[in-house]
Image (tube, rainbow, N blue to C red; front, side):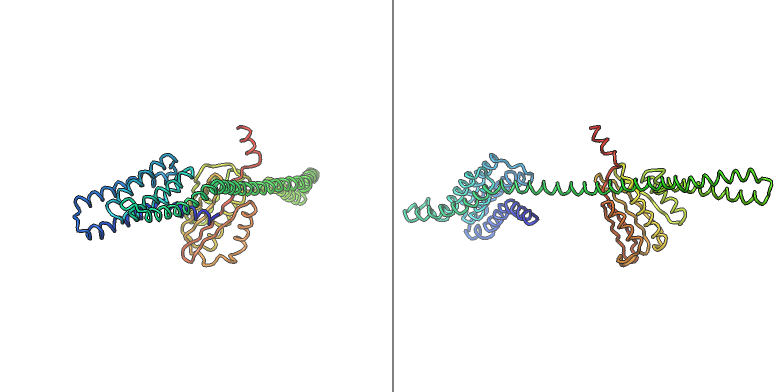
Length: 417
């Protein structure tokens, strides 16, 4: 299809520029060689020819070039344009035979006419005008000259007319094939998006199930066990309050058990990044970057572009982890003075860029576990990561993921429609 599109583009350019090229060659030859060689002055014959050349240029511009470029050329205007073009060519040929070169453009312009019999008729008219002027048929209509003229016109019209006929016959099929290919490409693109959405939803569903399983196990085992310990220690504390040493040990155990219970409850709720538990991705990134900037003493800025949209938790977590890992790498290796974090919502995709002005590195192959883990995480939600760096030119980490909404958000939107 890439080859086919290139051929169509070349043919369109040929249709557009052939009249201009042939008119330029004819005009330049006439005014540089033919007119001076004839001994005639520029006025009045040359001035009249120049006026006709200007009129021809305007006719081609408004009748053919602009309509083709704007895709507004219609059958009736195309027919009027061709008749006027041929009339101008015949008139110019009365000044000099060198304008036969411009008349050849009529064969190319005949392909613009619809239906195809009009195109063949245009070829016949062009051939009659062209060969009639070359062979001087109208000045000396002898039987031999007339027979030769008719034979040339017939062969020329047949050869070019067959091309017009084949083009007209194949054009609907070509258009159908192009439409079919476009539909197939759209279907493939849609299937790719659906596949990424299904992968993200399956991952989200699996993570949710695993989160619930872990929460249930922690609640049923560790949390309940620690609660029982606290209850027993409280009873022991009440019964042994007279013994200072026992009370001290029991108090320590009680504080430890309470701390463990608090940690267990925190673990149940903190299976996602703590920042995302309190805010959406843009705000979480700002919180992360501001805290990192204060800790490292490096100027960092967060920019959010596009219309914010709700994203699947798996995608938000993945992007947050990429930003977190990138900032960690900057602090460890980059020796940067400025860092920029950009989150872009483009409608169908979400882009995250982390750039620094540090020392960079010359080769990203084998860059470390952090970058490898980052790529695997983003690939798991249907996206990809690009790392660009050069020695002394800083580093840029770019993550691109599909903008998949959380489960239930899309269905609510569709229901609202």
